Length: 327
Image (cartoon, rainbow, N blue to C red):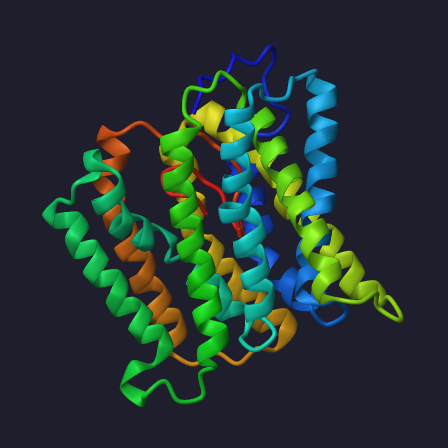
């Protein structure tokens, strides 16, 4: 990530408050997706999320008088990053939550660092595993099997929906490796890259959505508000919060938000959506988070953090390795 300019004045809110707000926003993103799919098709949820997220980031670019990236090569790489980090995983999570609880989707999102380590063995020579990181991968794998109830033969589990959620997390890992190899050192600011990437993802969904969906006959208020919150808060405002936290306390501390997201997603799903929770789900989630933390030990000390470009996210959903993001 490019060095941030020192702030001209102290932030109005302590970084811990903003860190907590970031965790809440990304944790609730899975609930917003679930509610959004009750009134809209998955592609429509994703398109709305990207549209409102782009609006927030575009407004920030105007206020800060930041410039868009230059060069066809950079824009080409941003288009690929937009697909891998936004258009594809956002859509996969939306389709996954048609058949799986938001709690399970949030936990699947936490596997991104595990996928990232596996891929880094091939794609990034500087990220060779240590014994601790290899152990973390094994621990994380055991955690995934615990969440899925492997000893019960995965009974009661929607295999397709779970696979889509895991594939979304895999897409995040691929996207972050791609961003690290292609968009570092472009000279553009993180906000400029983020806004451009989300804008390109919006254009991608604008092409795809009409091909697979029709205009809803009626629009319900709660799903609409969920999509607006998912985009404006989870994809737009959360990125602005992330930039401030990373600039103030560094990417290592900021990345710890990753480990709060599945906890909040689980609590929100159980409390507000009445989703059923068996003992293996929270226990497995804790094991997954422990494994993910172990896989990041060496990277946090010896390698530079990647360019901060949005995920979810949600990430979340948008949650990128070594730099908080999300669902």
